[in-house]
Amino acid sequence: MSRFDRYLLTQYFLMFGFFSLILLLIYWINKAIALFDKLISDGQSFLVFLEFSILTIPPIIPIIAPLAAFAAAIFVTNRLKNDSELTIMQATGFSPLRLSRPIFLFGLIVTMILLVISHYLIPTSNKILLKRQNEVAASLNAKLLRVGSFIHPQKGITFYIGGMSSTGIIEDVFVLDERNESQEIIITSKSGQLLKDNDNPMLVLQEGIVQNYDIKRQNLSTTHFQDLSYDLSSWSVKEQLVKAKLLLTYSSFELFSDHKLVSIMSNTSPTKVLEEFHSRTLTPFLALVAALIGFSTLMIGSYSRFGTSKQISLGIGILIFIKISESYANTLMLKSEENWLALYMPILIGFSILSLSNFIPTIYFGLLTGLAMLAALIASLTLLPALLMIFKPLGKENS
Image (tube, rainbow, N blue to C red; front, top):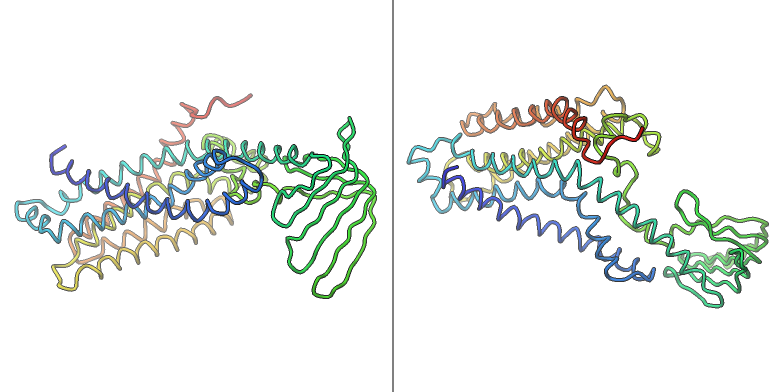
């Protein structure tokens, strides 16, 4: 690798790291506030909050990475143009294709990293997160079993038990739910039990009364019951989190080898399972595509005293077109398993438009982008399944 390539790669990765960090912080601050309030109200420590925050970060990385790659390509290329470094390079005989080598290597390296994250790190982190959610939900049960104390597991919730037998039966249960501003719900019961239903904590009460007071109408309704099941999942952090859905905890090998079994186990459709598998391969390549777009759009046109706003707007417009096409392709895929190819076609077609331009650099990058997405399609259908069958990265399949 030449000194020129190393220099530009360093610049690209420095700015990629900077923009990735900014986007991650925006996401983290947005999600962490609600997560922090919920965990602390559940009596969890700051370390638990930090652990949950870290575990929710991997799934967002493939989403923000293409944006960061695009921003890095735009920033570095624009600086090179403003400092006349690109002009000097072209004057010394560097062709547009030669100038594209560093940005292509940069996008390819980021893509490879994202493939590892999508196929290994994200399913692993989701498994750990789901396990920790269940542990926190279980700790809620222990927290509620305080005889003779009024407990507030969540804002607007008051819980009290007057006693507990040696068999785990709770007695003299009182629940006050004031979360809804328009009504108050009071539940009293002679006895009950704290149980689990599909890992969700449930309060099963016997022989009690439910009083529902409508604050606006000032109307009180009373219902007597013999048995009542009350879902406590809304009291725990589990419902408030960016939840690790069961499908996202399966390895890519499991999704590929038996998508119908996974659909049954995760209570999702087979088409959704296949869509998840292909998305884990397709999404990382968006980083390569975004980096090439950022570079190629700034290579279009000559110097203008109005700056590069038109070129940058063009790049942003192409990215928006890709995301719209991607959403439409996902919709087609979910309708039928036979439409899986639609997940790849919008990007191939969208970037092939670049090759129709009159600008030579754009033709190069349009073709390069089309080849990159074609390589992603071929790898998804041949190389990736073969590697998954050989290496089984998340362990051997249970017989």
